Length: 263
Image (tube, rainbow, N blue to C red; front, side):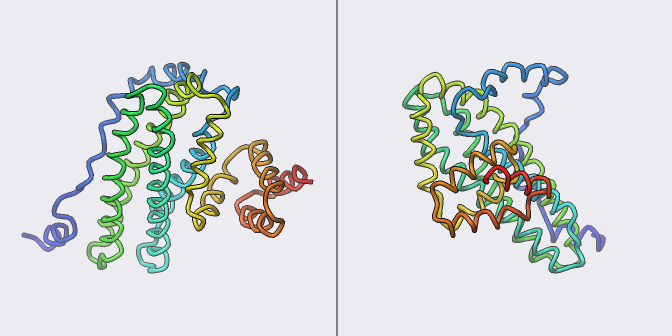
């Protein structure tokens, strides 16, 4: 066995452990975009939506982690550590999010229409396994020596890309089919009650992280509504902390607009 093949075998005897789902077969291109018209009804801002804002934050966090990992400086311990920490933090967000959906959103769906959450619940089981596999790969990349480091980070990057792709498709199902079902069976008061249950179960140390990803990645109008609500309901010092946290992630135009909206 050559030195190169020995090194590769040492790095990853089986690549990868985590097998992404076959998503391509469910997208019948080129009709996929045309088929999205079926989801227009759920996209209309006529009712309270459980998924829209948090999914904007998750999509941003997933995209950021993937880009950071793709741009890592393999020769820099600081760069490697930072990129792996970003992916690790993303896994924690994803785990907490699916736990909330299982406990509260799926419970509401099953109460309204037994069996209606099965498709997404099955996806969540797969995502739990995927997160565990990605965490293993993160550890392996962190420990990889110079000979196998490039391959370790490459495998992690490709697995993360597959995970993100799966989640983007999964979130569209939730925002269309699940939202439509919830609107059929739940009032806006019911949906608000579910949201409040979720908020109450977010770990206090994670709340600022959720706001970091959601607030900069929504429309100006959505940001204004959210932050006006926080401004009215939070102690001034706590709201000030949220405001200072979000400012670095906004453009100058967005910062000026937010100041005007909160005035």
